[in-house]
Length: 271
Image (tube, rainbow, N blue to C red; front, side, top):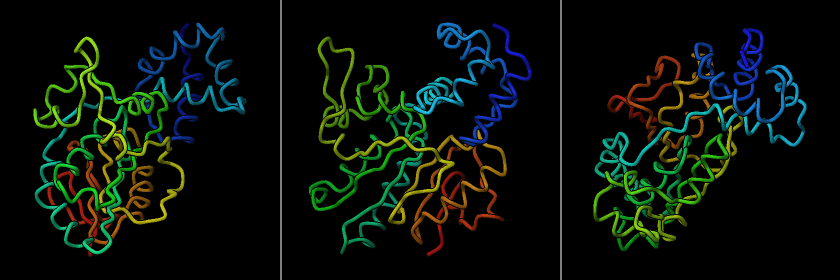
């Protein structure tokens, strides 16, 4: 089933307008990922498929389209220097700053299959130790892909996927499953993470400002103007003194968004 340029442009426009995703130079990827699904669903071509997507009031076809085309590549210990900085600099400051309220507001905006938010929860539990029960450190974890979120909520990973985690964390925060080839995140950790489906192009629904935001390796899918608009919303959602972590290969236009660069990929809102 060959995808025409007209069909490709229609899919591009839909993704861009609804989700900010720019796949302009990825026709082969889009076609390769969609072909088997579109064919098996009985559509004769991609135009017929997109007609169905855009008129499906249940939203099911649209969710499937996003699940197929969104990239959910992540792993435990990815860009661990962020978590090292969190432990050494950010959390000691927040423990002192929020000592009276004992509330931290943390958001992982591209949660994918759950490794990042679970690692954040593990780090928080490890850092606060016996104090942890007196603090509210729940992590809000969102993603546009419902398939990725299902895996995240299940919290089951292979032996290879957890290999890079510290041994102390493996023993404390993971439980081997029958057969010994997979491990499940403990209930104690799962209770610290709230997973929700969310489109970054929508208005942010947060009632409180965030102390810590992870938005790593997602802006590479957006064009300049979409990134600018997203970063403005992120800036407005941050507490004064709050921290933003982005992917190491990503950049911010600090001439537009007035965040202080602490080090490449770590930014802070002025107090």
